[in-house]
Amino acid sequence: MRLSRVVIPVLLGIIAVGFLLYYQFDWNKFKEISWNSHTFWWIGLAFVLLVFRHFFIAFRLKTITRSVFSWKIPGVDCLVGV
Image (tube, rainbow, N blue to C red):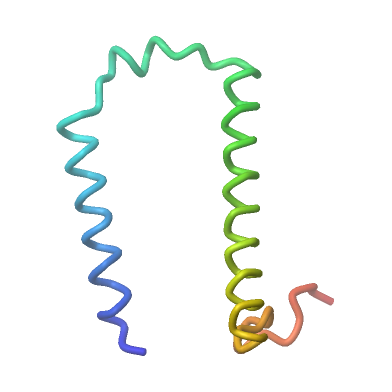
C-alpha cells in the first residue's frame, strides 16, 4: 500500500476540519457550555458508543466475508506485554 493513499485523504480531512472550525466556530457559544460531570458523562457515553460501533462494523465484515477479515493485527504476535 502506498503512503499517498493514506496521507492525501488525511490531509484533506484535516484541511476541511480546520476550514470549518475557522469559519463556523463561535467562542461565545463554546464558553456558555456548562462543563460539569453531566457533560463529561454524555461525552464519555458517546465515546463508548463509538467504540461499540467500530467493533460491530468489524464483526459484521468478518461475518459477511466468512472470516476473510481477521481479528489479528498484522505484524503483532501478542497484544499483552510480558
